[in-house]
Length: 248
Length: 276
Image (cartoon, rainbow over all chains, first blue to last red; front, side, top):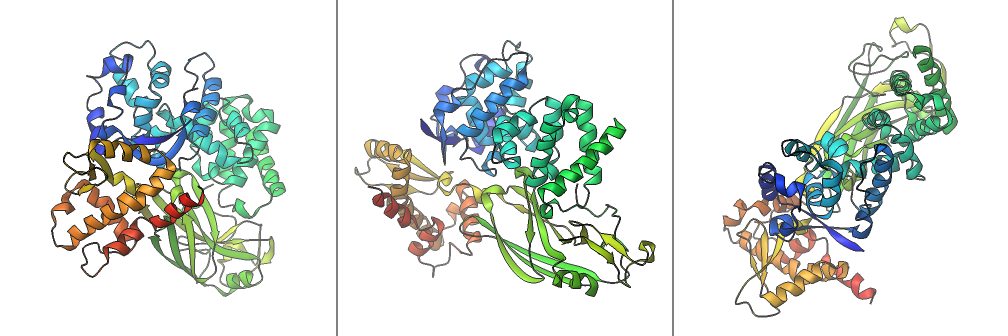
């Protein structure tokens, strides 16, 4: 089921942001569907998405959040596969999705049974997405899209496997996605993922992964990985691993 | 793993920020431009004033180029580029906000016993350069991709109901936040339905949006500036600037300009018919 992505006008976004407190009841209950066709809420983006797939988001909030985020990142990444990285930085697209098309998911995942006083802060964090950090780490849908996009960048042949490695723990995810200099360079990023798979020590403890990434940062400064072949990069990573083990 | 001015390398690096070489210079300049096809065109001018490093390049032991990095989109590409002038294109849909360019010279093979009389004496008589080592670093260049330019052009249009218009016809009102295309209720609904189908959108481009843009251009060319205060005008003007078009120039053909702004919409209509 294919539909067109929509987004809010600047004016509608500003108005919505200014009315979070007065809209607490809406955020806790029925949402904003009545505004879906208002001109300021209904600007066509010219990009199609899989409406049916997006509707399958798992709304539960179990103890193993990482497992749910993994499944949901695949859903959002695939349902919104036509979204370009440029457009995925546009807050108004994500605000439309979290308030209309994926409102039920966003409410149940991030508001749940929270009391009225807690709602505005949760709404600001997970229904809106101003700036890179909020888009990448906080917004209910965009964080899932970027998880999948980063996995796809690191390992286009098997983004699902890359995703499961990156999302093993919240700490690994943040250490991975925040190191843009490494994550965005496909051959070193995919080699790091390979090492995470083959060397259990790297992800056995959050501390290990942090130390390994620091070693990588330190030893990899100034290396042009783009001209190294797979074996050369793997040898380099072995050095980083040895260095990290001495520091652990 | 960054490349920056404060890094220290175990081998000499020619740059403005180090004194590893007594003399020599890696000079770089860039001109950036967005094309009508939504690509970033970079014209680079690289020059290397170092006989010893140039020799490595001539022997294919080293290469020149620059990193193109956009943190917002995780775009990070090492673009090889020859010394002198070169032109490269990058996909604009993968860029957003600040873009940085970092020119560099790097080794393609290990270089043993590299020596130069111009290398600072602290490095000794000769050094070994590993493969993939940065050996010259240019200054960082920064610019920003204006996100307004990436707004889909159709986002500045709006369909709305206008009473008293003959069925099957439209009128254009440019004096609103968005360029508003008015039609009577039944025609408006038909147009809205068409807009939600890919084939329908392709046909609308030629049959509705193209003449609407021509109408707007005619207004701007008449010298009436009322429309320039509207919200849509910023996006419209940015698109024109990208294409080197002055929308108020009376010598410009509204038909030709509109076709350029909408990227030859007839092509899409022809493609739709081709699939029937």
